[in-house]
Length: 409
Image (cartoon, rainbow, N blue to C red; front, side):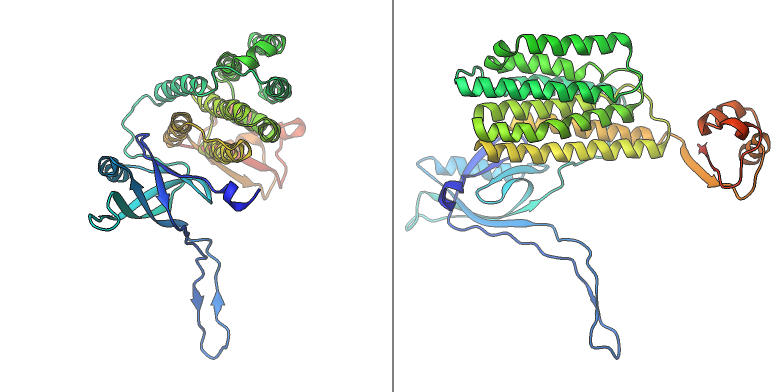
C-alpha cells in the first residue's frame, strides 16, 4: 500500500452536522514547543524551559467546484462561522476536533471560473468543551436525557444487516470475548444488589445464546448490549467504583475490537464504535445515582470519566483507520453530549460537597480529645471514628504518626 492509498478525502463537519468535501493541492500543519529562553549575565548558556507543546494548527487552501459551487460555497462559509468546534477529517493527520478560522473566500470569473477558493486555518481544540453558564438546574435529568438520545443514535448508526460469513463468525467471537470483560468489570463495582447481579448474569447469558442472530442484525445486538451496559448505572452505590468498572471494561475490550476491525473491515468497525460509544454513555449515566462524599473524590471521578472519554475518542479514530471508514457525526455528537454533560454535572455538584482535610499526628491522643480539637464538639464522634476506620487500641488511643481525616464544609 502506497501513500496514495492512505490519502483520504478532506471533509469538514460543522457543529450543526453539515458535511462538506473539500478539494486541495497541498497540506501543512504547524506546531512546536513552548520553550522560553532566559539569558543570564556572564554565562554563555541560557536557561531553557520546556512548557509543553503549542496548539497544533492546520492551515489549508481548499476549494469547492461544480455547477452549483456558488450555493455550496456560501453554505460552507456560513458553516465555518457556526458557534463551537467542528470535526475535520484530515487527509493525512486523522480526525480532529477543530475551530475553523476562515480568512478569505475568493472566486475568479475569467480563469479558474466555477470554483470558490478558501483560505482557512483549522485550530485543534480540546475533546471536551464546557458551555457557561449552565442553564439547566436538574443536571441528573439532563444527563439522563442525553444518555437516552445517545442510546438511540448509537443503535441507529450500525449496519442494518451483516451477511458476510467471515464477518459473522469473527464478529460473534469478538463480542463473546467482550461479554467476559463486561462481566469482570461489573464484578468490581461494590454493593450491587443480588437482583442487579442476577439481571447482569441473565442478560449476558441471553446475548450468548442468541449471538448468531444478534450479530447478523447489529441494531438488535446494540439494543441488548446497551441494556446490559446500563443495568448497574443507576444503582445507588459509590460512583467512583462504577466509573472505574466501566473504565476497566473499556481497557479489556478495545484491543480485540481494533484487531477484529482490521480483519473484518467496516461492518464490524461500526459495531465496535457503537460498543465503545455505548459504554461511554452508560458511564455517563452512572453519575446520576450514587454517592460521592468529598470534593477530592468528585475530582477523581471527573478525571477518570474524562480519561475514559478521551480514550474512547482516540479508539474510535483507531477503529476508523483499521477499517477504513468514517463514523457518522450523530454518534460522535450524541456520545460527547452525554459525557460532557455528566462531567459538567459532577463539577457543579462538587462545589456543594465538603472538602477533605488530613493530618499526621505528632503525638498520641485519645479520639474524644482529638475530635473536640478538630470540630469544637463531640456530637459526630462515632461517625468520624468510622470514617477513619480506627481499629483495636486506636479506639482508645490514636498513636503518633497515624493519618487522621475529616471533612470541612
